[in-house]
Length: 145
Image (cartoon, rainbow, N blue to C red; front, side, top):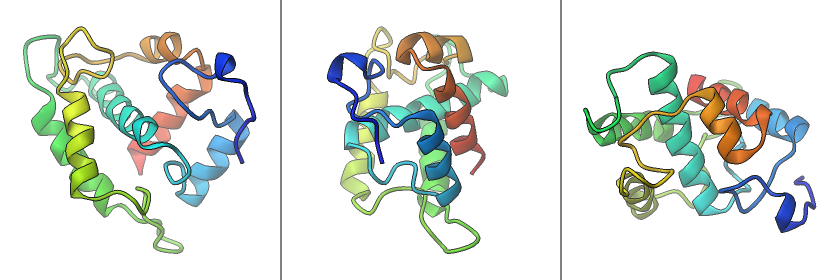
């Protein structure tokens, strides 16, 4: 259920592109992360969190506050999140403590790296980075789950 896009048409930073209509269907089914590569899941979780911190004006600012403690709480909630209708978990079956540590390590990268939790991202930042205007809304939907 993915685009058979050539690698050159993939959004920057993702290994597997999911088109807009399919993305929203996966969100409805709570399977948005289930068919994605691990690195895509890590990046999208980090960007969901960072976008929420920007959108809700949480006190994370570039270099001022380390976003990792808040991200850990965000991951706690994501790990517990299940759909009301069928108990489908938000995170994929392969997610475990080791994968969580890998995700957190990616967020702990140098502040100059895209996935660094040291800085927030706006809607425009996400759209520019991925080259996909629908992705911001999809991440917002993930953050509301």
